[in-house]
Image 1 (cartoon, rainbow, N blue to C red):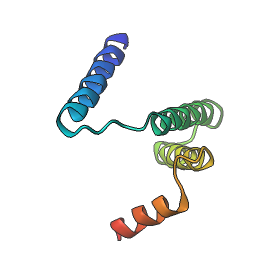
Image 2: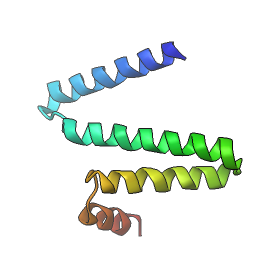
Image 3: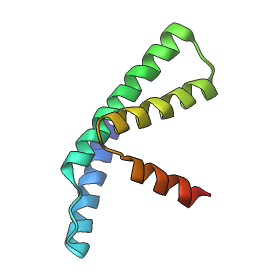
Image 4: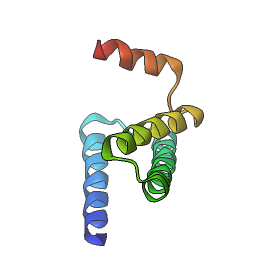
Length: 91
């Protein structure tokens, strides 16, 4: 499991480096941190739902998506305009 974490971290860092090298774009660190915090809330919620309620896979995944986006919205990682843009592109 740790090898996977190390390799994925290396791939992410290499990707950020290559994006910066060729486009001079650097990702906003605040948004990355907010996404990681929202992911931690989602992981905690999934852990609690799975252990205490024993929900099936579809309910657990739906709860995870809902927790992630609500957390991201409350952390101001997403705003109403972003949500409307996502909904308009999918239609």
